[in-house]
View 1 (tube, one colour):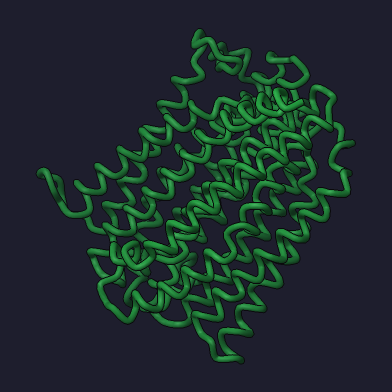
View 2 (view 1 turned 30 degrees about the vertical axis):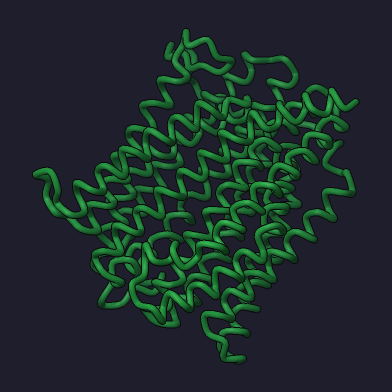
Length: 448
């Protein structure tokens, strides 16, 4: 039994660590982006921060489709049907291309209303609109790359997606240096240069993703470009329509909750909102890493259930939780010990850095329940139980967290401290709710 447990641990860890490293690298690049942009002033930080939630709201349909792709591809691989898995990947790529063209085209033309609704003022409106419009062009490329990588992760090929993200992020950082500040003979574009660098990185990611699934590469998943292979077959996607719809509802609730949460922080003023944006980026350092561990839970749950073993899926999920909790503890300890130095990369004012240091302690207090909830979410998505994930997200993220944070922020007068106390309470509640649902075991009997 112990030997088998070690084998399962190695299988889970081999999927989890590249996905976690990939997520960590993505967040590190976001922090580098923010550090570079912060040299342009707090108004530039606030302007870019205003685009985050609108960008994520527009990403919702793509993420929902990618959830469906992950579930279907992992199940078909677990059933021993690689041809069906490849057909699913092609169908979701076609669907993603059409949806993202509509979504991001609309985002480009409605950039100004989006930014005004996000809370932009005279100091931030111009930069935020320019940044958002350039970003929308790159998101078209990014969406296709994300769909390919979602399918690769479902097949357990997380090292490929990690390599893709690493290369794209390095390109992003290099062009940040060149285009934000006008180095190396390039024009000084400031905030617009940061958006252009991100879009160039997205192009790089797409090219690498396509190369990794080229025909003849030797992997389980590959793209054939024969014309007859690229016809839309809606019937092949019907089995996951409920999963995609619930995943979209989850994303909608998540983004509405985050939008309201961010809007609350923006109402406190430019300095407070810039501090919120910096602390949230550091918090995401952990959250995105947990997403990497959840990737292992999603892939292995789907493959195990496809092979007809709910018990094996549960064992993989327990192992994924142990891996996640270990990573969470290490990162939390590092952030607590070096929080002042970390904030020093973004903030020069001592009083603002001191306030940020206190907020980071609240973030780290919620690191373990945050990790547990994310991994449970990943396991349930792999089983196709996206309704439960959507329900918990609706109640806690979209409803309880914004209301509780507002009550602590304004009626009780805690301002930005109240925002982050609400953040901590919501993570604990979310972990308890989704853990309780997972333990009922209903996810084992879902058929796709």
